[in-house]
Length: 279
Image 1: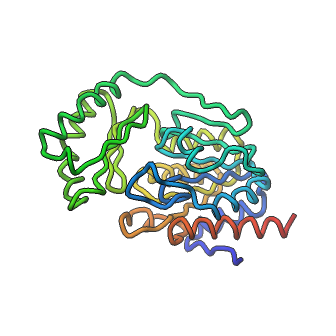
Image 2: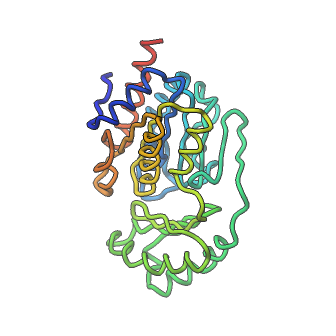
């Protein structure tokens, strides 16, 4: 399988660093829309089997593979089918944008206490949606440490999302939370951590000299920005967009664009093929 061709000079340097010194490189990936196709019901999401197989081949060559997701870490592990996969014994999953951590080496999740604001929002959201006449056209996803409102099932998902932006922002602010926008979803979550901070801390933990991050949604922009900052500190970086028709911002800023989760799986397989051949 052919290696990818980043379109930017910085991206080409990031790919070269990964290939030249894989044992000092970190590959970081979003879950939904990157490793797993987007589906109408988030509970039905599952990682692309080819992507998981490619990761299992790629991971032993690297300093680390980490999944950084807005989902609870344990849910991402379950839906990804990551536990017990040969080759992924060093995998780390950072859930809730980095507030939770699951290590394959121990099989345990570590997490802070859920802020009181999340419980308050959990109680208040149904009444708010009902007052807006949107109780029947939206779907609430309780993530434990966050609550998400999905509009994908509404007759006009984008109009429903737009109508919710201000009232949900006000509700979040009143309870000390932040709103994370996504693909027909608004998530009310604790402040103090995002995917960029999570990626930066993990890269430092592993003393990485090269970082690849792949994502698909607005919440991944923070990780793209972290890669740019790391470049300024001497860490080579490659940003990859798992492209969709729903979100274009990442594609405009990525070093490499691939066609959704199948494209991510093909990229991971190509990297594994190359490193297997070099070993």
